[in-house]
Image 1 (cartoon, helix red, strand yellow):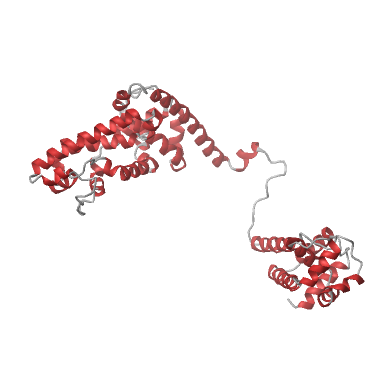
Image 2: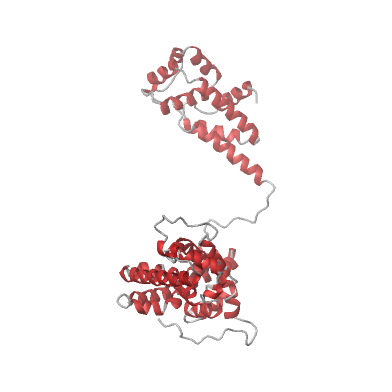
Length: 396
């Protein structure tokens, strides 16, 4: 866009409105800009911004102070906006001699256009959006008196799906709250918590997983779950029966946490000097059993001294550690001797991998595949394929 066209554009606007009335100037400017293609509007804005920057001079700042009694940075920018909007003649007169503004009728304190710049930018955005949307054909918009009652009219399937999800989540939450209340009641009998460890973990995993991933599961399963009196109980029982907490499938990964390919430095506090001095595999296994017993006793003691809420929250970690404990103690034949020899050097072989075990447990709670294989068997369409679960095997 040529500069002469820019100034002609402004003169045409000022011929129809009072050039000192910001609202009127902005309205007329936006209306006229909307007649141009978006790229021409952008060129107009670039020229306008150039002239505003060119007016950023100390002598014009003095003129701003004289007319408006303000000279801060924002007020001066509004003054420059106003000056450009007055047209080519006044602008260049003021640029060469700010005192020439005395020859023009300027209302005291009104030589400032605060929203002139943003209004022209809005015109560009509106026109660009109109051009972009020009080839997109949409259904008529919702009526002005739209309300929640229109949900079934506009998005019947979407409304049904998420109404179902919200209803089921509420039902699961109420059931989970009952379980938590019963677990908190075991505060003075932590042994009872240990006895129910796997049931507690299964309920936590199923609940956390479903709350995070419910949108991923087929709607027909959600509908059937909603019909159950105790959906969380049924789902957790199914989880225990189908998947359980067998550590063996993950044992190769767990062994990797010990970094058996890297030698342990004897000086570290993690290493038992007595274990280093052992020469035979049998001696090392005796040391390993001692370390495992001491470490598990410490974990149980810590659990007994920890507030019940925290114990329940991390129950899956303790459960995994206990499985590792029994496996290392009673199933040594499953592991390479050199791996067990390496682990025997550690004073606290279970605590050593507590951090990666924690991450593994978090992943299990968030992994939708944990329930993907459960739901089809819980609600099988094929007679005889359902999992055989006794109702009430997990008590609240």
